Image (cartoon, rainbow, N blue to C red; front, side, top):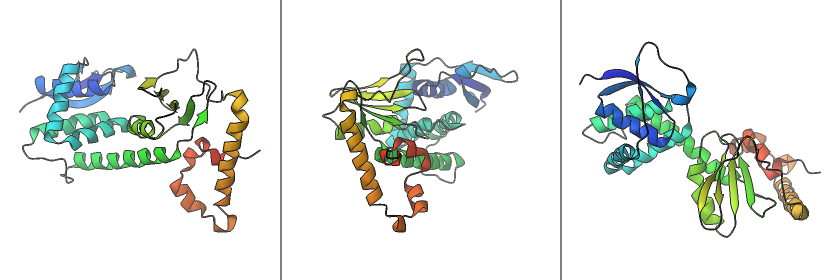
Length: 258
C-alpha cells in the first residue's frame, strides 16, 4: 500500500495521539514524525497534517487495541507516560504494526519497536514502584496531607489508586513538581489539580499549630533511619541503588536533623 509521507502535529494529549493513529489509516498516511503543536516549528520540506483531537476516533482505536490484547493498549499508555523523546512516533508506528499484522505481535521482540516498548515499560514500572515507596506526606494548613515528587516519568496516573486505597480515610494531595500538576483525594473523589503561575504553590505552608507534631514525626523517622543504618554496616552503594540520590530531597530521613 502506498502511503503519503507526512509529519503529523498533535496537542499532546493521549486522545490526540490515538486520533492521529485513526487519521493515519483513514488518509493512508505514512508518519515521518509525530510532533507537538506547541513546539511552534513547521516542516518546510514535508507535507503536514494537524490532528484535531476527536473522542470518537480515539475510542475506536482504543477499542481496536484492547480487543486484540489489553496489554498492548496498557503498554502504549505507559510509553506515552514516559515522555521520552520519540515516544509519540514510536506509539503511532507500533499501532500501525499491530493493526497491519494478522497474528499477535506484541511479544515479537525481534522487532525493534516491540523491544523498545518493552524496555520503556520496564523503566516506567521501576519508577512507579519507587514512587510508591518514596512518597512522604506532610500536613498542610487545611489538614490535607501533602507529598511532593518529581519522578523521571509521569507515573502519577499509575500510582494514585494505590494511595486512594491505602489512605482512604485521609484527604491528600500528591504534587508532581516537575510537571506542575497533582492528584487530590477528598475522601470521595480523585481529581487533577493545577496551580497557576500567578498563585504558585507553596509546599512549605505547614499548619503552624501542628508544626511541633509534624516535626516530632519527622524526627522520629530520622532517628529510626539512623538506628537501622549503623555506620560500620552502612553500604552506601547499595543504599543509593535502592534510594537514588535524586529522590533524597523528598525523603524525611534525608533532611538533616536540627
